[in-house]
Image (cartoon, rainbow, N blue to C red; front, side, top):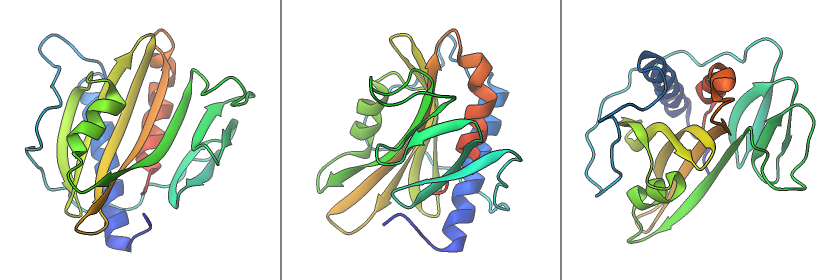
Amino acid sequence: MCKSNWKRTQMLIAMMILLVSGLAACGGGGGENENAAVTGDAVSSESVQEAAPADIPAGWTAAEFNDCSFAVPGDWNGDADAGVWWPGEGSMAMGRPATSLHTGGMPMLQGASFEDRVANRTNNALENRRDFTVAGMQAVSGNWTIRDKKYVGVFIKEEVSADVAIAHFLDCRAPVADFPAYEEIFNGIIATFTP
């Protein structure tokens, strides 16, 4: 359902590159007065210029979930049925690993709000929020902290029909103290994401 034409894929890659650039420019962290509440459905939009597809870095492996593709470092493992990948050894036996990525889609029936999906997923804690459009689709990126974990991620609203939409997401997280060590890797993963 989320595979699309080449132009849309190019636009999504360009959006990911802009996300990585934006987080790097602001240091990836929130500061005083940088929090943006996720309220209402009205958002400002920027146009994203087409860009060449992001190459998979050397030593990384292509991964796929629900026809959405991305790449992870070669030493990462994953559970393709759950849409979760993590560094090194481990499993999902005790739930999602503390340092990991998660991707998926949240269905939205008529009347459901994209903003509500973003707010619920980020626990109303989205910082460095950036609203834009990709190939005509509403998109939001930013970072957030829930308890002792810091996240960075992106959400894209795909209209499937007049009554149904999907809020696609990819988020990466690590314990707050460990996040700086993984931030570059997380941004690399997000840059390869193509719903």
